[in-house]
Image 1 (cartoon, one colour):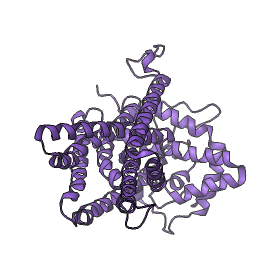
Image 2 (cartoon, one colour):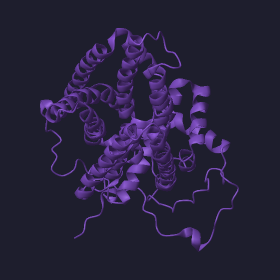
Image 3 (cartoon, helix red, strand yellow):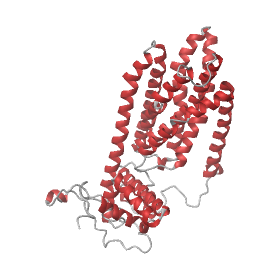
Image 4 (cartoon, helix red, strand yellow):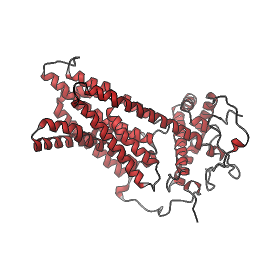
Length: 461
């Protein structure tokens, strides 16, 4: 007998093999893990602060800190913008940035220094040791150190890591933190070099100005660009089914190797002559940046199409209103709904609408994975949790979403009719769903095929 997939099974309790009353070990408790990570990052931060200040001096450290912080808000805002369809929790971004700025930077400084000194001692050639360290050792060590943050979120925050965009955002924010600390070190050392040469302040012909131009103006996206390749690998692995174990291991490994390769090529530009930097920048970095930007934006648009395709099943079952799939698949309509809630009911209502939008998007992605057999054994439990979250916010969210639906009509195309519109039967939520208290679902759970992407059932009357 062939069992039905998880998204067609009724809600019957916890998955087999899990006992509801079983208590987790003390080291498995969330607060223990959070405390351990916080202590690790705090200690790493103190050590990296002492090391950087020791190398740059107090004045150089302050100058480097003031200059290195300039691109950080722009990069964080860019990655947060990419994550607007299904925004992840801020705690994941804070962890990623702190890991990159503290733990990964500390590992990189210690490992790179040790490896370079060992090579110089073994070969008795400090110049070649520096070159080998920059082009081979540093890319390997730094990309592994940054990839560790992506791996940790992938393993322990699995519900928040569902696709390519999540991988790009976590990897990019981690690399932004790493670049922030590295820029403090480079800019602080450059300022110390200028002081030793008798140059006061940050003159246009100073080493500090040149370092600032190269690292902050021209290539603030360099480290994020490298590590994003690793994040894409983990994002593709997140889309794979649990049984596809080889794919879930090989693709992130391939992404990590690509990140190391591009990082090595970038560091090698210094040994290609006076114009090596500009040649590598124009021939590789700019095209790669453009390609990855296009990929992430295309992926975000595909996520919106997934929302529009999956949510009509829940609208047909009565869990959400008929116009909501259209509204939730439009970033402009979402923003209008939040603004309406803020004007009419205050910031708390706007926050509730934003949460409603995020939970509905997660529900659409969950169902999409379930129909493809990639949702895992906890599909039904997670689906019910998301439905309950939507139901608890419906009174505040639905008027705002209704306003957004009226304010953003779809293109004026006629509603299709006839056999072509009927299409194949569309399976709605599983029959075993128990609606929230006080809700009477449509009799018999009569499901309908989803409307086309351009059709807004609310505006049709």
